[in-house]
Image 1 (cartoon, rainbow, N blue to C red):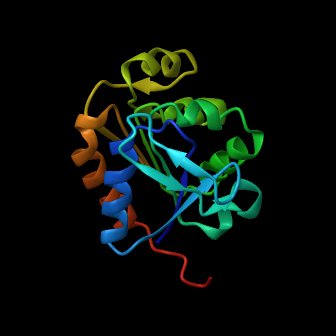
Image 2 (spheres, one colour; image 1 turned 120 degrees about the vertical axis):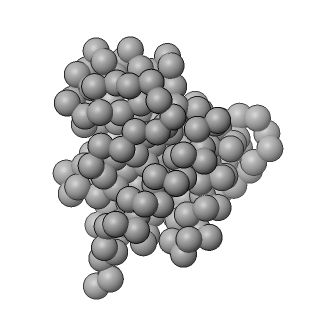
Length: 176
């Protein structure tokens, strides 16, 4: 599977690195997509530094089978970019897997894709989700169709487990 990881600096270090490593170890290709290509991206705790493989203007959702949105302050910054919002929405329009942890659902709110969906998020985002019509539950991981969400770094093992199940269940588009 080809996974798009949308990322900006100030991401939650573990919420990016641990799933990223697990997805790759399971044989998936993960491409880090930032606002600009080749930009250095630093985690908010300073333990992880990476860089964007591609800029948002260089990619289309059709090039990927799934979307991964780590938490921290990254999603709040990304939702200020209309291209990132459109990119995110397209995964829902095409019913592709979307894997979002912690503050990740902030980007989903801006993409207007959470109404009627069951999900979870960081505690301060849960009320925002309710106000836009999401069915919010406070548990370590929630799976609603092809959407996997978790709340915080302590939920990472459950998030990875359920994300990998979804990725295994959805056939990769091998014709590319």
